[in-house]
Image (cartoon, rainbow, N blue to C red):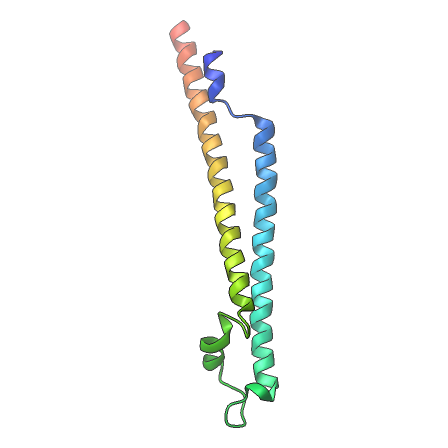
Length: 120
């Protein structure tokens, strides 16, 4: 059984990993909200600030979407979207690490059961 313990992950590390996953998920959701707020502000500004008017009228939503929604006025939304990509990747990495640790517990469980069967 002692040889099988090498397949068992440290449960303290797993608990810390779960906490880190929670933190990254919260950061990711907050970044998504920040992006939505920035996009909403873009629509608000372009519909009220005459600087963005076309022919004396506020630009259409399609024009705003194609022109500023993805990037922002000064690429500020692009920067936020890049941060969201990083947070998404980090979150996925951590979740995959946890999944592998869970698989290691399953391997330990199977090997442990097999060892008990062969010693009976």
